[in-house]
Length: 147
Image 1 (cartoon, rainbow, N blue to C red):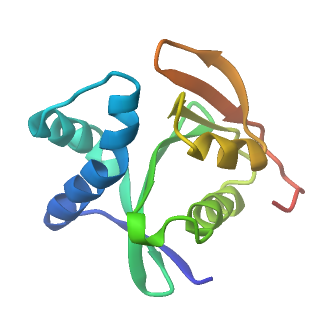
Image 2: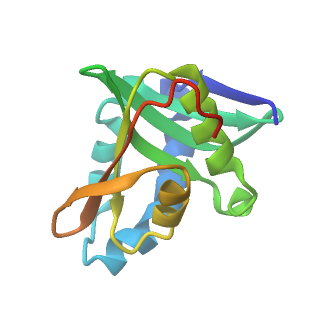
Image 3: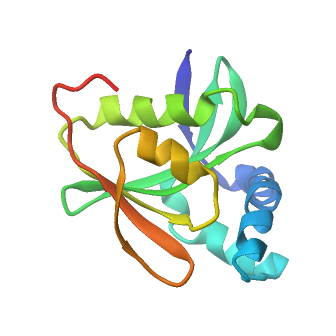
């Protein structure tokens, strides 16, 4: 798979908002979290400089938002467009990121009923904390591990 992470620009906001609405609303509402379109836009714009378009084999399939913070990498969002889900693109994107930052531990949060949690477990993440809505997960640095 040919993977590219392209820094998102302002022109990408409509695509990313639509992607968020099509991938997150179901999971948020299952947790009892109901957001307006304006609230979704605010969340999209939060730390927007960390947003990247996920391009696989020259096709934009989603977004990966991440930042390096305190010697670890925080995955803030991984969203795959519905028509590209269950094809291994999320797994491939995370493996790509692991290879780019082999010396960094990774952290993320996932909604408790989001099936992506199983993907994260399969890639070496474990739960270290939780709140009302999310599990907090981390994956140690793996300098010599092939994932």
